[in-house]
Image 1 (tube, helix red, strand yellow):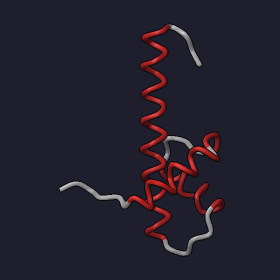
Image 2 (cartoon, one colour):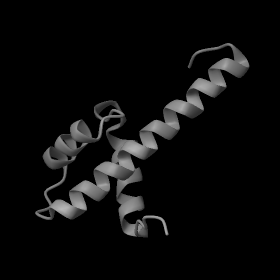
Image 3 (cartoon, rainbow, N blue to C red):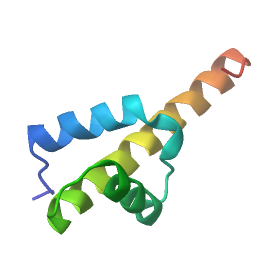
Length: 76
């Protein structure tokens, strides 16, 4: 079985990426620190889940952008 992320985690992570895209990287530890400074939750588990999903989203976006650049030959 795979790891399950709730819809609330996914929604909040997408919102954070939309609002603060330039702060996040593909590094989980760095994203964890950024989320700690942005969001005021006390739960370590919630912070780690958000950081993990944000890291995953950033990696997906960078892969998607790389594929688009290769196919079109234009960097955006």
